Image: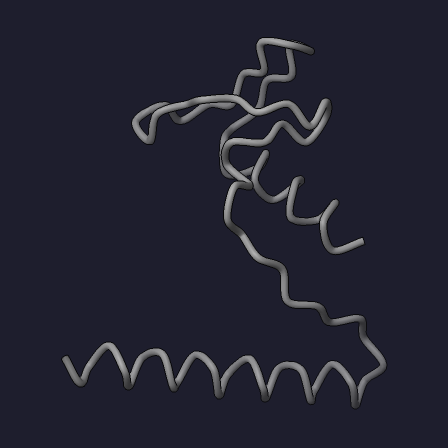
Length: 81
């Protein structure tokens, strides 16, 4: 039980330090909520229902195909801008 709290505190401290370093160097830093990024197509913003076993992302509306981790990254990148 205590290990999860320690990991959460360490990750929070890491984010605080990263935010400070980005501020010091003049680099853009933003926290993005990653919920729903795997189900949303970065091209058409349509909701796609893929199982966790499926390694690829294939949108039925626009035909966008990519590895699901790359598609989630593209969606998070769009949210950050």
